[in-house]
Amino acid sequence: MAEKNLNLTCLRYQHFGSPIEKASTTWPERHVREARACPIFSKATLFGWLAFPPFDAEVTWHGGTSFDVRVGDVLLERLWSQVMAELIGWPSSWWSSKIEGVLQIDIGSVLITPPGVKLLVTGPLNRATEGFSVQSGILDSDWFWLPSTINLEPRLLGATFRLSRTTPIAQLLPLALGFEGPLEVSERQLEEYEPAHRMWLNHLSFVYGDLSDETVLPRRRKFGLYQEFQRQLNKHTK
Image 1 (cartoon, one colour):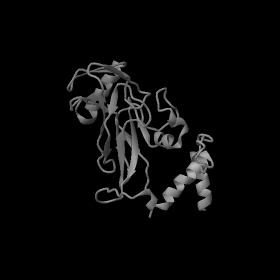
Image 2 (image 1 turned 180 degrees about the vertical axis):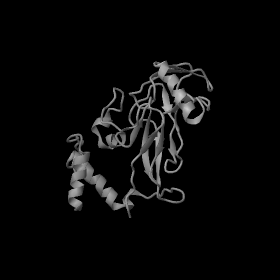
Image 3 (image 1 turned 90 degrees about the vertical axis):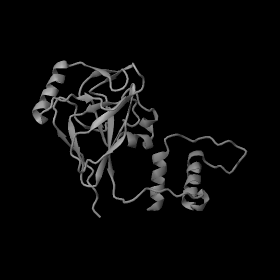
């Protein structure tokens, strides 16, 4: 069976906005500390692509759909609306609020994925957002070729938060969906699945050494053993 192509195509209709970028190895000042060292976190943080707001702005939510959005470059903001008027006949803004308590950001691109590949849009993984949360959704980007907004939910009424063209507001993750029907979960006792139980015991021995003496408290030999343990497993399974 051929592997799915997980590449993302961005059809830009606004040249004032920030481009979609591959999830970067450049770490912001505010991030989950463990994400640098632990592969479990870093692989998630660096997976997919990052979306950015098209303008630097200060945003204040006054309740309902009432937002005060102050942009640093007012001229470019006007040009945005002019481009939209020429493109679709309507001078729409780069932001709107059609849902109470939600600021909807137009990133200026239509996102397209190969057949059978969707896009999970969510908040930047392991990167803190200031003053707002990001709504998560799955885009039918393999056939619904229309602009989609990034939806932000302010955390505090009346508080002001900032958007920056260099700080991501969302992460885009490819989902290759090849199943039909609902997802289900089954439950078993750990002891019934011997390979998992044995791996756990092997990992404890690998990290702490000999655990046979119950009178001695185990001391961790060292940190950062995840990849080393993975290499040992791969070596024994070849």
